[in-house]
Structures are given as structure tokens and as C-alpha cells.
Amino acid sequence: MTGHPLKDETRAKLARVSTASLATALFKRGLRNQFIQGAVPVAWKGRSMVGPAFTLRYIPAREDRNPITVFRDPEHRQRVAVETCPPGHVLVIDARKDARAASAGSILVTRLEMRGCAGIVTDGGFRDAEGIGRLDMPAYHARPSAPTNLTLHEAIEINGPIACGDVAVFPDDVLVGDADGVMVIPAHLADELAAECTAMESYEDFVLERVKDGASIIGLYPATQQTALDAYEDWRRKTGR
Image 1 (cartoon, rainbow, N blue to C red):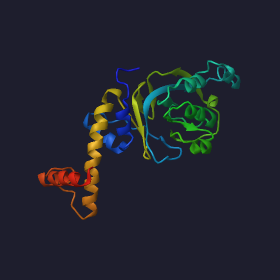
Image 2: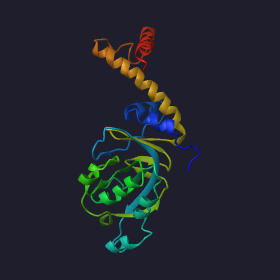
Image 3: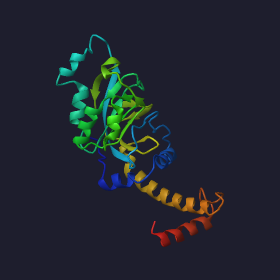
Image 4: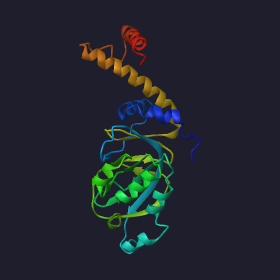
């Protein structure tokens, strides 16, 4: 565990902000590469996924090490990861962006849901994707993939630093997933980003209303004119937003 556990208040705020807003806030801090490339919802749930990362790393499978019988081993790291990912966390899998074989299937993902995990993300694929899509727990992948993971992947390490979709993911980094995809937030920034993005999206709601009423974005977005800021504060008082 890091020294920055995810607070319930922060989790709730992050569940209401978009990955786009988080990307902008991270960019302001010099972090340009926090969006997991290629990972999309198996089926959008209409709500965001939020949780600390619990990681699993795959390396390329070598045939003499990965016959189908390895699944009989109670210490097989894929199975152990599913059974030890803490409730409220997101299992994040480094599949080297290789979706030719599955990272997991519906039985393992169902087990994560039953254990109270917040979601699962891979930069590879899932088998039984239709079944995974019917689950309530959010899941993100590159595309469906029927072949068993042993075809190409060996689960080698649990809860160490990984790469997922070209992003460095460390245990307990905070993942936020919406309909667009998944952002990775360094754990020590989660509280301040949650507060900043909540305020950012409040202002953007105001801007969108003004734009729909025919307003120009110049001076409004970004707010470089005091009149825009004054109008926003008046809008907040009237709407409570």
C-alpha cells in the first residue's frame, strides 16, 4: 500500500468527473501519458469505474512452461490475483497490448465482481466478452479474444509496477474509467484532482449552457474575461451547482 489510501469522499467525487477533465488536470501538472491506450468498455454501465490499482503482469508464454495443466496449480498467478485483488480495487493487467489471446474470461471476472472489486482493465482482450458485458462490474479491454491466455501469456507477477496501454501503472494508483476509457492518477494526486475536476466540470456545465444560448467561446472558455467569471458565480448562486 502507498501512503495515500483512496478516501471515500475522493472516490465519490472522481465517480462524477470525466476522464477528459482528469486528462486536462494531469496535463497541467506535466503528466501527458496517463490515458490507457486501446482500452474501451466491454459494455458501458452508465457510471464510472473508480478504484486503486491491483496489478497483474503477463510475459510472453513459452510452450514448455504453459501447458493447460498449469491451471491446476493453486498458486497460478492469474488465479491468485483474482482471489487476492482487494474489494474496491481495480485489477489491471499488463498483456503487452496483445489481444490475440485472452487476459481473462467471464468466470474469473464474475469472481472479481462477487468479491466486491471495482473493475478490471487490460490492454489485451477478454474471452466470453458478451458474458462479461452482462455483469454489473465495469470491465475494459481492447477487443474480444477467444483463445485461452496460455496461448500467448504467462502470468508472472502480482501487484508490481506494470505497463498497461503504454501507461506506467503502480499499485494503488487510482483508475477512473468512463465511456471514453481509463485514466491513471498517481495516488498522491487523487484528492486534489478530484476537487479541481469537480470545480472544472461545474464551470464547463455553465459554459455549455451559454454556448447553447449562442455565446462565443472567446473569453468564456477559458475564462479570460471577468464578465464570464462574474456570470458564472451568479449562475452558481441560482443553480446551486
